[in-house]
Length: 212
Image 1 (cartoon, rainbow, N blue to C red):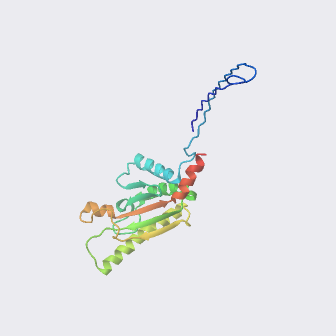
Image 2: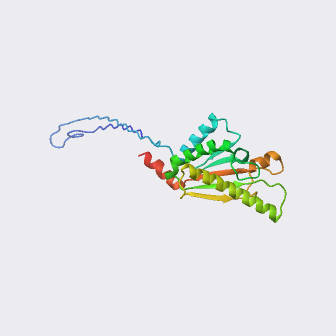
Image 3: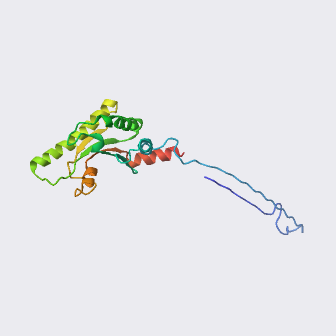
């Protein structure tokens, strides 16, 4: 905080005006100025955990030209990582492609850096709606989405990520992010998402503490 104070005082020193009984007149003036400056740096010494993991992964995606395979979303309460199924898995299978393992390892390393400063991490699997709506086809969709989430979780744990903040979800084809009417839309819907969550109260506390 920048502060500047300028004070000027003018007044009578001995007597102001005529002194009764002596007829003497006395005048006195005094001036004084003072300046004070202070500054406070409100930026965090260490970046927020969500910003940190987002910046690490965005830099990795940019350097390796993975924009069409890995998507990132940063908000006040979470970072969401979108992994397309064509990058991660064999078609209609929870088996991971060998080429995707180095990418998932980099993601795990970034999450591990902030693991102690986030609240929980959810790994969710999603499939596309191909138009069949039988009990059998829906069961396949549920199973595939869940098994893919489990596969990603198992790899992350195998790389060394802690388990106590992890959870998995399978959404089948019931949480699309694009239209299922086109091949391009269905390709977007087939994905695994890793969501790293930090409560906003924790984030605000960290920022206010760092600014003191």
